[in-house]
Length: 261
Image (cartoon, rainbow, N blue to C red; front, side, top):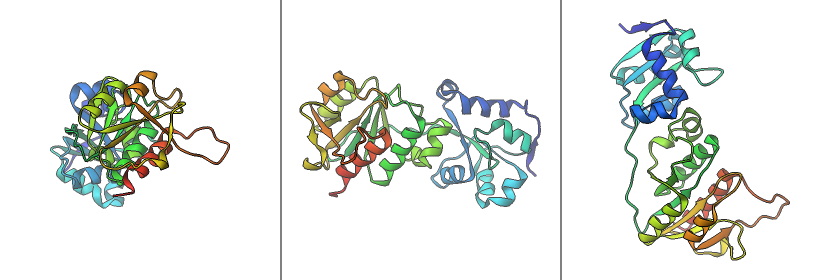
């Protein structure tokens, strides 16, 4: 019989709230919170064993994967709607939550890989969308500066639709550091930046062994990062818009690097 949790002050409930709200709590504990039937079910199917899993009675009736998630967890419990409302980061919670260990996602750079260098992004939704797009088109890995949003935050996880749990990531201190690391491994690294020497991205034979750097939504890439990359690319546009948002720009860059495969 399932354990029942009805108090919003239960220590496990408080931990889930902290993990949902605080990047520091996630970093220090090595744990993160997953919410929703699809995300939790996807994690379990990909071999993640939750440390703890929780579901409302309504969720157990409505979502087949809820029972699978509870069975896979080291500890599981039935929670009330009130408890679900306290934990949830959304207005209409599905009533399924689990605490998961952070996976080891670092990787070794390969000369025939395709990479993105993400520098000082601000918007969690953009980061999640980029990670989802990168997985969809077979990007080998993401190199990210540490000041990007925490990829295990609820907003990034929702936008990434499970791709965060499967996409290799290497963290670096700065964009310039990331560019130098890639170049040392023989990767041609380009800055997505409007410079006097920027080349039309469609005119460059991108493919295996290449990387494009995407910068901050408001200020773009630093000059130090642009210099470290060595070459710049621009996305040709016919309309009056002067730029694309970071996720849209990343999607175009990913397509140009992977479409010749």
